[in-house]
Length: 114
Image (tube, rainbow, N blue to C red; front, side):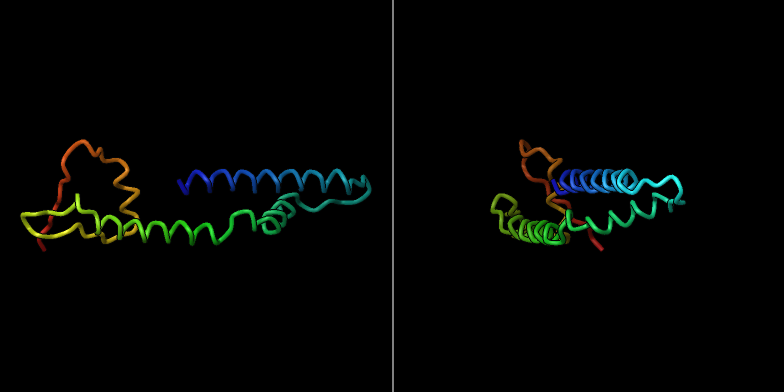
């Protein structure tokens, strides 16, 4: 899922920033010079390496969610013959929520009035 990929990419990003911060202080070690805080260098490396988590990944996942919601509306197995209606998808995150439902049971439609 998207969250697993983001966690992996975030771990890679943080580890690269930590390694580069440590290497900077090893490379530029001078006992006579007062060093600035390592946190500011860490943040600078985080900004420098922020290309690891691309924006196109977010766009691709959102497009998949959007198109997946249309496939749910077009699914003939989710058609209610008594009402003559198809499933209505009001959010693109519905396909992530439905991953927890077993398909062994017949589809259940919940209709609210109001």
